[in-house]
Length: 301
Image (cartoon, rainbow, N blue to C red; front, side, top):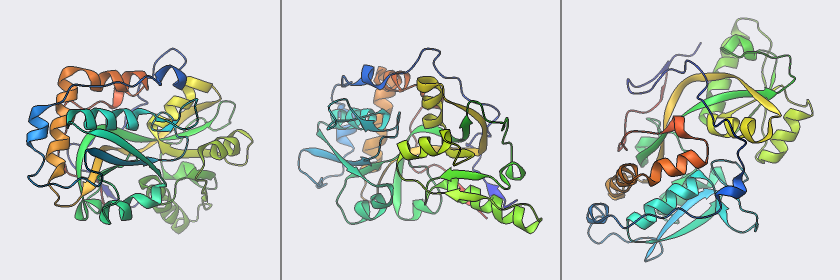
């Protein structure tokens, strides 16, 4: 199998993180969580820094319904979710208003580089390749989960041999896709049946494909898989990818905003609003003790 070198701080997955016992309901989480301004974070904003929209922190985030990371509220016009909630804590801490910009996953790299957004928050994992173009301030530690429908005959996916011959939903351009395709390459070299990746950008379509039997499994962020298990009870988690990864607020390389974002996150951790956000979205097991700027990331060889 293609060797994946993980920095020492990344944790090998040994089991599924615990999730809240009660049924999760996004409608219960539509009231914003705010935080006081953080003078220490404001002081770290580079002198003369120009925000995309003066007085606002402009954040690109998912336009798709991808709970708990991001989704549309019951009014169908307000973005909620754990990433929008963390973005609000950042804006409040920096003394700014929040401007959330719904975007596609494929759009955030160019949008950051071109200066359309101050930061991007798409459950973005830190990789050494991405660090060449972007700076990061971590706020969660995520892993990747394989999910199947509750009555599926698949009971475990523990490694690359277990995905041979299966139809697996995966996001294009994601770390999960890279893992899956590298596993498939090694499997084919050993004469195992090929994987059939299924690319669906819409989470509702992906769920329907899984439940209807048009796909055998999905491979995506643990947070999303755990939310579906807790809120719907139609799926189960049967395995994980080979590592956990740092999830981080992403900004343009060298603009200096990363340290202010880090200070804002650490302030929210200390004051408790950070844990409040994660708890209401069932992400407690992904909490970090402190935010890091540009930690060692995933390296593929």
